[in-house]
Image (cartoon, rainbow, N blue to C red; front, side, top):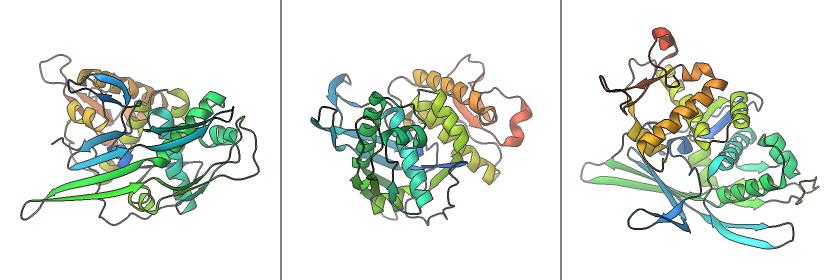
Length: 328
């Protein structure tokens, strides 16, 4: 069993009070998707020997401590500019899926309920809501990721020791309950407003249970400067973990191994490769928020140069101690 690097909260616990979002200053992202990252690229089926195939995988599963999150792709229907319908099963992945999820969570919390109204044009949605530059190609992929995320089915399983045996509990939900999108193909204004209603289970068990607040201005700057979905995940995870450390005012925090981090973030490949990608992402974040990265120490094994060990997170007051920074 992997060590949890985020200590995800049990879905049975009481909800935190939700503070109305100031859209200019605060963004929200579900803790569930900080503890379990979405895929970085569309997953594919592997052979018995672990070789990748060209067949898209309809299931994505991640484990974090005694929690398991299973995601199952739903059916997505789109219409191209020639009016031809396309129907496929799509697992949300990549940068755009994270931007859409961030927007869904922030808007739902700001609205105080699972019903969300969208901009009346694709251009408005991309430019104003997601802070992306408009292009027909970008709009098509954003629509695909939006529909894929809303069609996604989640199963969160908690495994805990019981007095006699083991207790296993699973909560299931689909993300979107009612999706009504009306946008013109060229992104121009459409008088009919589009609407999304999240399922009540997703609203209660994922969005409102543990919404993670963070600096939206820094998020928007990072979105504009990076192409890496891992960089966005690392920023959200560090913002959350460092805030919790500060709030608890704990002493010396434990070392989080590269193995456990790679498992949580869904790394596909060698741990060494993940470590290099994580450090690269840290440098991208440092350019936006140097104070955040200043609190992340890279820990290597004593006497072993470049040994793959892990990282340690520090309180704000520890920054001046001169330890080896993750981005150095």
